[in-house]
Image (cartoon, rainbow, N blue to C red):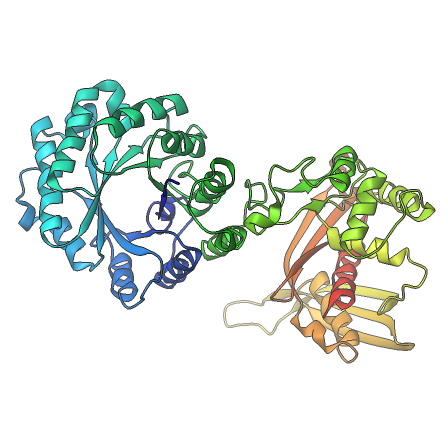
Length: 528
């Protein structure tokens, strides 16, 4: 079985995505996670390009990776500069990384129009740099920049660059679709041509500008490439890089290639979410394989089929990549959705039962009133439990009141200041006792949350761990202006799990209250 090497460039190419700025600590944590996951190479950055990358390599040298080798990235020597005097080459050596990836031009038009040097000098720059780094004991990969565009423009020159790199001692020739515009058949043709003449391994580095980076990478592997470069979640400049979270499962589960063992593959979704958290980006729910919605099912026909055969509407077992199926419930759902989702939370419903039909009608009625359950599974789960004859809620609302006022602060030297203040008064019944509490907050929802917790914490101290992590409001009927229905979605977390609840009303505070109550009740129902 062919061994495919996985080369991760999240810390360098991935960091070039708009909106990403990894700290040194972020990079160290991600590198550790990648090593545990089992990638072969971790490209840490460009030594000498900025103080952050310099510090990363200094600190990464103290980490003893168990599976991966650390890679420093940089360019070949500059035109007309002796390789031993080139600042970039020196920085690569000083990084201490055992592997160096050099980016070198392999496109004649790029050499002449962008690099502004001769074709011969460019080849010398590539060969000199590789030979020198090899003499210092480094493994060296060549990232042949713009290779596929160059192959189409001047095939002979592009192959000459690779040949010179191989003769100089390059350990792998990585063909780059730098502008991301090639098609899979073009990738396959060029890779086959290189593999046919190369005496060293060939790799692929694809960008996603035509949304073909994953397809192009797989086409390259089919054509003989044995090193795959990419990033977690496809992060990268412009439209991103080839997404390792799709490539790795496809190579193993679809093509049957030896890339990673089953246990590590089952951590794929965890790795994806870890990196998105470090990047301070919301996880994309629609990513293949690892996204929260990758195995979600909304149509009643699909859910009915899945209840009979797990692969009816799923191309793999979600658990293979650390994901899980989700049954969505909405006004489009059939009875099968209700039964399947209830089963997932441990409530058995007969397909022909009045309870199942009643729940379906209730969902449709509530969604017509503005609720939406496909993104608020916790609220739906509560609907199921509340429909049970023996369910007793952990608390019951008697009433609440919210007062909002503008207060005048003591004047400063320059002027008087005013502030908005909200006060909530809540009356709830807990274990037969009525609790009457009040609290001030910086807004009405915050005040309600604080007042409700004040009433509940003496009975349920575990609620102290619950935090509201997101709060979204959507106006449902814009044409009616301030009389419109609004939907409130609340995301909550206890530090280990997260859940979503919904409320809807023509009154924003009531909608918020409904979602807030569901959030706390759901936690109390499911706490260990």
